[in-house]
Amino acid sequence: MTIKTALMAGTATALIALAGQAMADAHAVHPVTGQALASEQVFTYRVLDDFPSIDPQLIQDVSGSEVARDLFEGLMNEDAEGNVIPGVATGFEVSDDGLVYTFTLRDTAKWSNGDPVTAGDFVYGIRRAADPATASEYAWFLEVAGILNASAVTAGEMPLEELGVRAIDDMTLEITIDAPRPYFPQTSTFPTLFPAHQATIEAFGDNWTDPENIVSNGAYTLSEYTPQEKLVRVRNPMYWNNDATIIDEVTALIINDENAALTRYLAGELNMTDIPAGQYPRLKEEYPEQAISFPNSCSYYYMFNMSDSGPEALADVRVRQALSLAVDRDIIVENVLAGGQRAAYTFTHWAIPGWEVPDIPMANMTQAERNAMAVELLAEAGYGADNPLSFEIVYNTSDSHAAIAVAVSQMWKQTLGVEATLANQEWATFLDTRGEQNYEVARGGWCADYAEPSTYLDLFTTTSSYNDGKYSNAEVDALMQEAKLASDPLPLYQRVEEIAAADAAIIPIYHYASVRMMSENLENWPTENLLQNWYSRDLYISASE
Image (cartoon, rainbow, N blue to C red; front, side, top):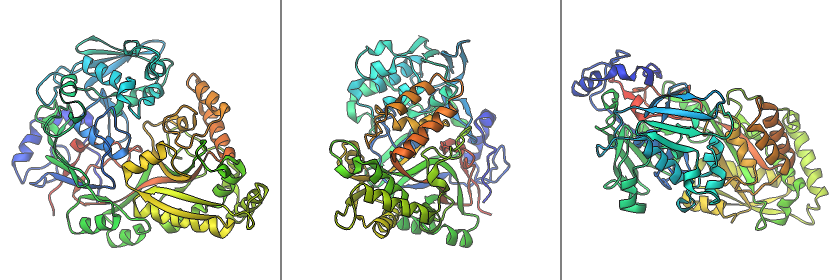
């Protein structure tokens, strides 16, 4: 398959009217690429778990964010390479000191009920995310973005009106940040900073995202949602650039079993699905144009419960180091997964722009050397045959997660004599288990919210709401605070990774690749977008040859 990247948002306005013609003519060609278009423009893909929420201010997972980018539109979007491009805002100006961003909104942007999208809708949405009453799991993201007073407002120490966001008029939004942050514009593409339709939320409360109630401003509207089964969105005729959209309908099928999803893909029921662990080499040989792998800015890791409710043994850094050393990452990426993933000894994904991986001693050792050191450390900590350790590894239901947990438990058993039991949980339950520290060792996966190392490293700070292991190191906190004001934060970020590795704050296992089966006629997938922030409106289905 040739993944087309010609359909960028920068050229999208040139498609107005032409795309509408394409929809009416089964033999029409794409107005930019010249490809013949399929008469049915329907995209169906698989997700692993149900959606905890599709409310932009409450979303905390990748799949929910994918839906949000279709249903809603923020100030800015991303193109196929991950560059920031206009969304509801046509652009922005930055003050000389780099602290004040002034966004100009397009006057053609509308909500799906016909109301205009205004600067006040962004103020309401962002304040809603910061409001302690909303209990947003991503309220901390406002502080990461640097919005003035975000920390105090989200803590309830300042009124919402003190948050650094205001509407100058209906078409002009001003956001003030606390320090120059080159990555700030990219944070505006994230759902937490999306606008919200106040009247709808006030009318329907927690039910405002039901298909019969929701009012959204993106290229699609929500037409159907069946929990644990599917979520369907259809084109929004009120979207300001609807004429440039080609895909008419998008369906996310919720399928927990990767192999079942693959079977349905091969039967033609799906345009895209993840490849089950270990099957990429075979599928690449059998379906060379459909099996694909490319870097994706996510990191897979195991976290330790270091809170007061955690096992006493995990409070000992020697135990954590031993458990980390005994994990043979090469076996996991080469044999268990075999899809182009990379072994990880640090948290930050290797492909983040401008990132240079620091020298971590463990990474330079052979696995035999790591195992020998692990045995020594565990013995020093007082554990061994006469005082054996046992842990429970908790993960969300997935064949791949199970395969990794089995491999890790066998490594721990063989090298250290540690017994590990495995427990899988449904996604929402799993999130609660981790968030409430009702576990011993748990699977973690973190995908970058923006293309800068702090999107990973902020999770190591004591106050991060996603620090589910409750790791705390005063030097790390100070370094991350210093990095916010540093002209060159790279050395600070590298030092944080070095400390986290020495403390065995987590067990980094691998850096993700997107390993997928993708229909040959699904075009314009943004493989060059490291964060994999895709938009259905940029895709299209070409006619079969």
